[in-house]
Image (cartoon, rainbow, N blue to C red):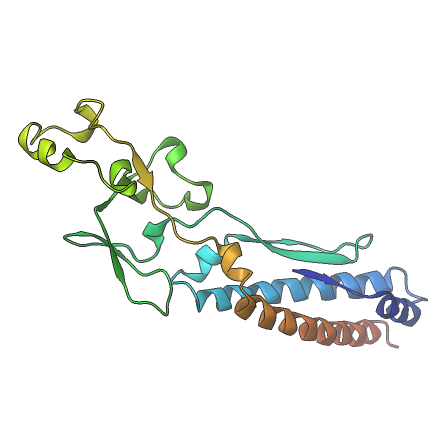
Length: 218
């Protein structure tokens, strides 16, 4: 999301503060940056209405590019990897792990999944505060492998998966949910946020102009 002022608005503000050094720049940079900060709060709240994630986790994937005197525009950007599925209220059940990703949906048990600690490259930078993740064995992800369950029970009942013969020592896949940026891009989320941002920007400029006049006793 980009917040900037058009040439007509810029000219008007510069005219108002032509006798004050950097007066127009101060008003505009403060207005843009305040708008972006408040808009991020609104965006996080609306995404929180979509996903069962805490605001702190949603906010983590947003960053603000602030306006400066020489760059009278700023950006609110959502960017990041898919969120680990374990962060969506993961709860161990008999058949697998129960999660709820979207608030409008019911909880769902993802069969044959398990929770384990991740290490090395298996831990995403976006999940650095989470030491455990949800996993599924690769053969189950791909639809199963004939005879694996039978052989596991008959020939290797007490052997750890990692110590079994190579054909049974299947890799695991870390399970993830949606990306924050994809939810933010949904029309029902970004449109009202954009409308609110435009209104807030106009109001903030007016307030900053009044504040500048007050400080200069104009």
